[in-house]
Image 1 (cartoon, one colour):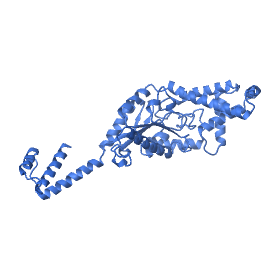
Image 2 (spheres, rainbow, N blue to C red):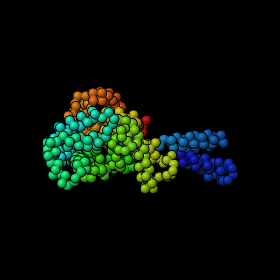
Image 3 (cartoon, rainbow, N blue to C red):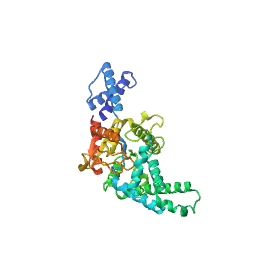
Image 4 (cartoon, rainbow, N blue to C red):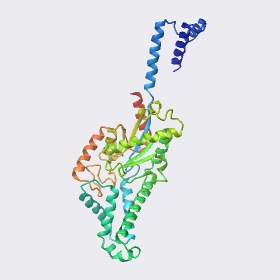
Length: 385
């Protein structure tokens, strides 16, 4: 940069002397001697100008790369989903018992869930599916039926009664899901997120999930580290869950808006109406996505432009862990969780997507503590390229 400034200063002074704006030739000669720049002709001035202009243009085009977006899957990326969902289901069954549905149990509830899903030939949200299963459990419970007269003393409308119980049971399940996620949070999660936030203060941190997981409901752990969350259950997203590209496209769109707002608040946005003037524009940034599923996270995000980082414990490299009860689809052909409602066709399609995703990963890690180094290597590689 210093060399470039010297060249530009020399060019300007020399041109001024030729135009007789500066009569003192000695100053230019001294300048040439001091910076060891040979005397040039009028033609060489033109050549120098062109060369300098090209150099400046290249420097402007080659803005330094930076981490603009860091997105995360949640289930089996930050916590073991099987344990979390089990405790949430236990809480839901306890709530059903509190309302007199004493014969409800987890196995029968999961069977209701699978049965309902097979009856629906159109997409249904996981929240709606769970609520329908809770209602069906009430309708088929003999113990609940015997307690109806006592429960109706509080309300004379059975439909309203069932609606309130369904909502209460779902809220109990959802709350315990987040509480259990905080209890079972991987031990290196918080330290890793703190380090990443310190290292990349201008990066947008996003949770991208298909289910009910929400870091903002985890106020004692993950909430401070995320800028926003996108779920496949959201209005405007459903039914385009991962691995559909739409959910990732919306993530990119919202993250760009979020970063623009942040730049305005910090007074670093040079031109609010023209992102081309911003050296920290997303076009110069790198997007990394972290997740445990080769299909939903690695392959799908890579197809949308992400540097996909696969997180998978060493003892599970042959087959990815299940996603969650919310996903209702296993992510491996060898381990089928009891809660899965996936059809054979869905499992075959997922197996193919997983194999394709394996070839699209930018890095693989066995724990979150390895993530900062993996991101640093990706940025270094992309910058050198």
